Image (cartoon, rainbow, N blue to C red; front, side):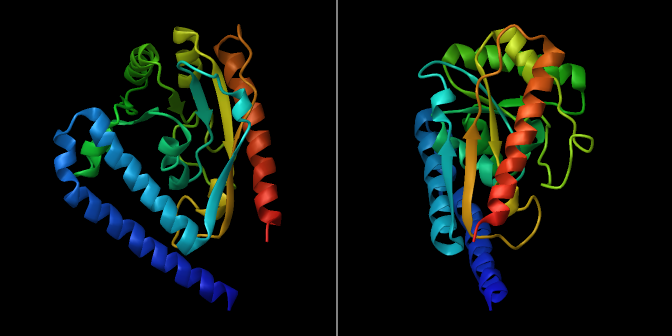
Length: 248
């Protein structure tokens, strides 16, 4: 009975989610011609609507821990674990006007890519590592000057909960950003992949946890910065995963 209920709730949500994306991309299309601030209101409306359906159709909510580790003002860098589409739709709820480091191909998605471009992300060419590092650094300097938070996924892609750093190693881009800008760097652990897998129809009810860890120490070189982030993010995310597995 429980598995049948989960299937029904997941199906209702998935239909609402994908149908809602298609509908809003069409209905809100004129928004891409609005000033950026107005267009971002549409993006926030969308992610807020998705959150509503997650909470009341799936029974899936989230909590944020460790906000005291974030700077009270100004730009900063967040090195986030990436397990699911779930967290990408919470970034504009958790943060004020974030700039997300993402692959250029996402901007080419019909209609939705137009709204994504309006969010003024840091888009990179992942097929050219040297060019991508330059794009990351240039973008981070630009966004840092705007006082906006920069969100980067150090492993460069979504990672299954069972995959290790041997499968998806941490990349140096986040350390290069820190080196070029001198901005505070805060790791963000999470356990979203347990509730909303990287791929799959079924989604679980419960509470996703986003946990901000203490800032990466100042003065570390690139290699030591990556080692610090990897060690603490993996440990904290694995602990959150075990917590999720024990949840009712």
